[in-house]
Length: 393
Length: 137
Ligand SMILES: [Zn+2]
Image 1 (cartoon, rainbow over the protein chains, first blue to last red):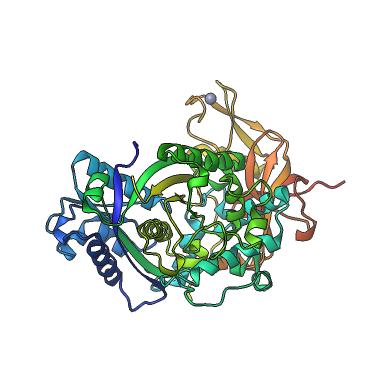
Image 2 (spheres, each protein chain N blue to C red; image 1 turned 45 degrees about the horizontal axis):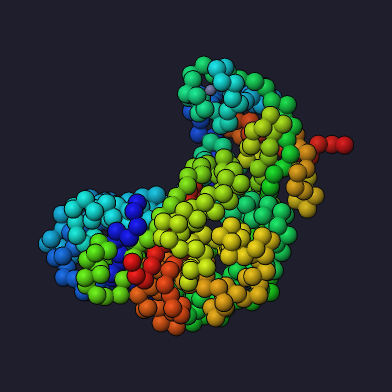
């Protein structure tokens, strides 16, 4: 992509909660209408709708994939609708597709949204879905692996090689939850931030992962309106301009994922995205990392050269990435802080990136927020997409 | 709650059946490309390096080292809770192949990184899953 073709000019979001009485369509209405109103556009200006695929929810997924949303919301100017699925990387691809629609003339304004309701899925189905998705059914699943174990395998090796301690790992939860406590859309809004001791005192699920280092599933949704960078400038409204995008594919099967290749992928994509944006890491105001589990954060902070090698865990333990620290990091608290909404965590991260650049992040507002690093990955980590967003073009 | 308690068996492909037949005879087979000589894991229909269909098999020594591991104490699927605690690992075979497996015949606290292990088969519904155990000194 070339630099700065699109911008997010409107955002909408509902709080992440377990609220079975709030239906999928409740969330679709509330998030999409809020995003369109926030953009200053009329509903009939929306010419394209892209749904981030809701995982493990076949009914709403079919309704959205088969084009119900524009009709339901009366988007009279809509020319096309589609769903995009790459697991946690769906939102990044939805935004890329919006860019293609806008630059090719298919649509001037595109609505990208996500909705997930976990609380009405039968527990056995939920457990089975998350046990199998992204895990190979021939070479991995029969051994009794889970997402938690996949993360444990990676984290254990990282701790062995880097010397990162359990206390340092646990402090990532403290950091992420310190942001979440200030976020009205978080599951943990206003809740006590667990100390390192409290995290380590929770049950050990699988080494080195404690219960408080895993995720709580929640219901939620969000939406954003995307237009061309040119139109965004003309509208003279707060906007988040997309300035860089780089990606590497690793592997679909967990065991085939070479740790060194993943590390190199994180390094290279950050460098390439920043080079496209014409910035360096010193220019980044917020590292809005989406990694789904806390255990990956120290390693990624080192790969992004935010922390020196071997210092990632120490930086978290010192509170440098916490709310009020000197390195603004994952300001919705990633999935552990927000509550896990399936593929929607990455949607929520992009909305937060836009919110910060628009200056609408309230208590969590990063001062002089000019550039944000925002990444996403799909499946059990089959790729990493690094993007850079700016307040101006 | 109505949980499916059936333990899963590998969902095979026609080109991986030979691997599973091998395990029944206590052989750990690795697919090889007869054209570019690549060792291939997991088995493919065509060589992922050169797309040749001229594929064969070699028997691995069954010796490996533990790259990493994680011992599960809870939050696994209900069908596996009766086996807790158990240790999942990535092991590197001598032949340069990496597999996911279980580490058995060993207390979880005795499992170490880079520890030498050897294959031992665990039967489930006619399949013999390659598990690994520490090499006895
Ligand atoms: Zn070949």
